[in-house]
Amino acid sequence: MPDMSELRRPRVGHIQFLNCVPIYWGLMRSGALIDVDLTKDNPDNLNDMLVAGDLDIGPISLVEYLRHHEELLLLPGLAVGSDGPVLSVHIIHKGPLSELDGRPVALGSTSRTGALLARLLLEQRHGVRPEFYRCPPDVPRMMREADAAVVIGDVALRALYEAPQQGLTVTDLGAAWRDWSGLPMVFAVWAARRDFAAAHPGQVKDVHEAFLRSVALCLTELDEVAEATARWEPFDAATLAGYFRALDFSLGDRQLEGLRAFAARAASIGETPALPADGPLLFTG
Amino acid sequence: MPDMSELRRPRVGHIQFLNCVPIYWGLMRSGALIDVDLTKDNPDNLNDMLVAGDLDIGPISLVEYLRHHEELLLLPGLAVGSDGPVLSVHIIHKGPLSELDGRPVALGSTSRTGALLARLLLEQRHGVRPEFYRCPPDVPRMMREADAAVVIGDVALRALYEAPQQGLTVTDLGAAWRDWSGLPMVFAVWAARRDFAAAHPGQVKDVHEAFLRSVALCLTELDEVAEATARWEPFDAATLAGYFRALDFSLGDRQLEGLRAFAARAASIGETPALPADGPLLFTG
Image (cartoon, rainbow over all chains, first blue to last red; front, side):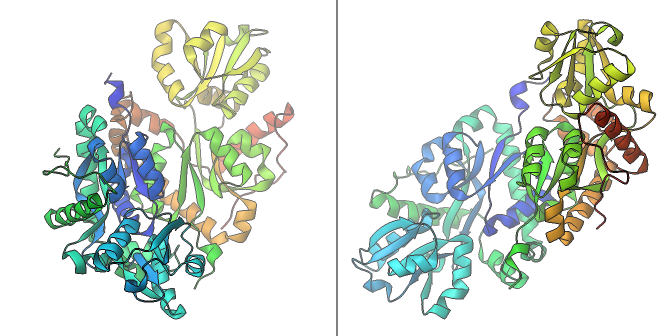
């Protein structure tokens, strides 16, 4: 009989947002789902579960990764980011960003990395210090109470189409970061818990490879993913295909450079601990 | 923009037991998973969720189906049963079944249909009236406190190999029912809530067809399912393949006849309401 501790499928997280449907498609079509115990949830809950050890491997927002990087190993080659416009991480605003000094800016409670990126951009690039507050990601309500709102995900994607009709400006934070830094932005990464990886390196290797295969597969079938997903979403297949293509699911050298540049700026204002000089610590199989 | 009430994936249940791994494999390999909001859980919780309306479509143990048949539509062509030995629904006993009159018999708390089938067999076929009590499905403990134990699922499958070494007899309840009635036994069926089917007949049709396709697909790949599953279970691939082949995932005329015969016997002792003469009520697309 095999060692029973090896007889538990690894507990893996999955973000139940539109931006991760292609990855789920790949996990399904490649057959990888049969080898994982998958928990689907929103990013906030998944962040907490990975940090608490209730998941072994999972996606985690970049900010939460930086806050807990010593307990985690980053899985190379896999992320949710963009090299330019991301279409789903926005500041929505009434007037110019440079006029937000001292003004209320609502941060959608589902956003961690997007909210911090917005703050860095406003303070360090536009030289303004708004009054930030957190609240549920409800754009009409946010814009009644604030001069600008930061939202992500499906809500942000919808706002891209609706906000201009209401006289609001949408600043894409992926595009703004690229203009500012010249680099891709990484919003979420995948990581394994270091204790789990030490005990089960083979399982982490298998899951990592399964994710890489799944992403490679879904990238060849994005039109099919968009077609299948459009049945259940208030966006048509063409819109979804454009959205999926705007996303960068890779984590290579340029993305890691972008990650380090963001980490350095976040650490400079004390929002996250500094990464070590040779960081982040990657899972190397 | 489409009707938003159609824009929610149907909430579908999945039994997280070995006997349903082939069905999950089929849902994955056929791509059906992308169109459902799947909840994996144990049979008891899934029974409760379907009856409470927290699932739209799902597996339900035959006994719970019979108790709630007026609220449900049975999906034809799909079940978990057996036409002879099922290998995973057992009475485990010390002496002959005919000597259990007045003796304690432990009913594993995860079993509904198996427990009732055991009672019917003992009372109506063997003419004994044991003292039944419910308890957690822990075979060694059950056999310390009782003369016989009814267990299902992974626990029962393991007991098939371990009980004989401990001088215990295993009576396979699928085989015993077949000897008694001449018919297949149906342990679990799939059903849609009638209110959901009335509001979303097209969704029920799609999910039903997806399940039928998934079962047809998995039956052609049972050795692969067994191979993949053996990585995570204390059974080897050959044992699992034999187990999967013992299961009858169909619900055709003979299985429905078996279901009606069981329902009539269960109703005769007041355990379930009687099915109508033309029952059960099938979803007909």
